[in-house]
Image 1 (cartoon, rainbow, N blue to C red):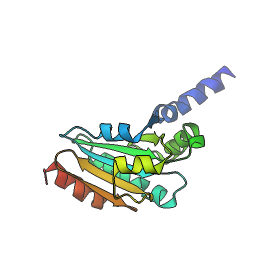
Image 2: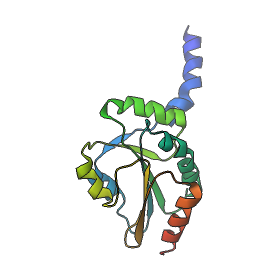
Image 3: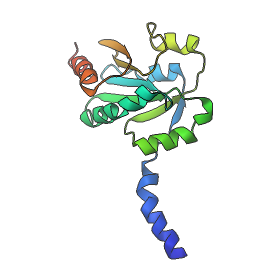
Image 4: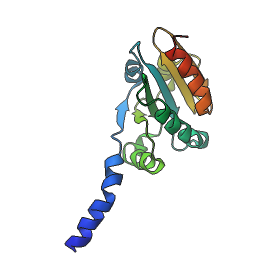
Length: 160
């Protein structure tokens, strides 16, 4: 019995070590996260119950790999309901093997959090904010591709 437990522990160790600690954030926290002028921030707003959001998740894993070691930070902000945080959300993130950092938006009033993030946001998901303080920002409602986000992020890295 001890041997089975030991083998099971060894087999599960890589899975357990990959689990993210998903923090709860407000819209103010998110905008503070994106404050350094020498960094491009790619912030995606999504939910586990949103089919287009789930379809585009591999694009963000690709972007994460593409920008490793570069002045780019990514944050995947879940707008899942409170009953999904943290356990259901954490299980989903592990199953999908999401590489970028994931956070959960703790605010529930879109009249409060939407204007703090982007005035033009109509509230649809998915939505992506690409921002470099002092250079510019681009907000995209709807699904995005790796290439589409990379074009904007690369231009911002170059100061355009």
